[in-house]
Length: 604
View (cartoon, rainbow, N blue to C red):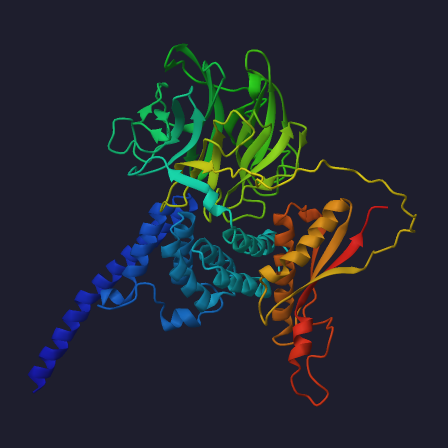
């Protein structure tokens, strides 16, 4: 008996001795996966980071037992409150990686798990989850998560501001998707069956396009997943086979070009990413022999300010000026649009920021100037839109621009839309237009044509055209009435809702008319709730209600700086929420769920 017991103990000891080194090796491998993932994430290489986070999470999931969830946390990790566990942090950064790669279907369930486990220590997970839901077209769910974030996030910083703007975006999306003229637009993908990016088109004469692409994988152009300038025939909406532009070879990425009117001078961007930091500058090359470009040289420091990024040049008519994008000092935040005056040789003389009529605290990109209509088109993620980058347009010239307007749906989509050009020789911008969008792609921008059908207004046969007659009559002089502090509009809501419904459009359109008539007028948009829910919840809901109204007014061209958002929660009821006997008062609650527009300032 003792001998048998001894053999069992010996066998058990041998087994433990074998398992301990294996367990140690497994733990070491898991640690290496995490270290590699974090390193790639810090370098903004999200594709590699996601691969290693996946390996790390799977390596630590019940040691490979069948049916295990690779993303599940242990009981100890779920109880950990003093610090975010390494696995939860890895789960969050895996979700972040997929979001930044625009793979929203993979990101969404990961964010959902992070938010469920610990949204307190990782508050931005809730906000970013909302962004993903919005990109997936789940607008009501996105609004719920945005409300949850604003309710729990007390910091008054750029993230709170961005979340409030996202609520406006969701409201704008709903109104745009309901447009009745969307069928008049035709959006067509130019290069079917191509893998990788194609973007930043430039007219190359009347029958070809110069653009940027990463189609070189499997070709002889160079490295895979590298941006190159290339060209292809383009006639009747059909793009031919692309060939690499005849530029001298470079180890850097290159693209986003501008071509002089005579086709002899090329301005373009070259960039590299080192240790997660981008370094970009604008280069110029001249065509010595037709189709062959001289060695590019860096444009002078008037444009290329050392220590900053300069990119996406656009030449103005006559070659007298250059629009470009930069994050240099003197801007309004993020990337701004800038203007450089050029001499007769194309050399920059001076450079100025386009100003805050165009630029925001966020990012403006991809300028294009349509000479026939005198219109600047650019992309921005800093204004109310459909999500990501939207295309906006503004009339004018450097020094004098109109307030930018969103092209709306379906020119813009729920994803990124950038790099506009138009071959139209008239004022009709959306005739023979080409844009870059990732609306149908899993990862990358693609070239697409845009055409808007213009419906002519034809008078009926029995219509009599009456010449306009202006009747002038004496009008009694009436003393002006001071409307400051007066409530001039109210929007109602269902319980816990913050959505502006079509039934409110007429009332809001009258406010738009009022603001357009008095351009100096400023109004407060104040949201209110009934008393159901906590004080914090009602405050966040009231802010969301006010933001939804502001989004509608902004979508109609009203400057957001004239609109003051205020959330009052349940503190200013119009009627009792309960009757005198303590029973519920549904009619009173309905009156209290509202947004009021109140005049703060009028022209004198």
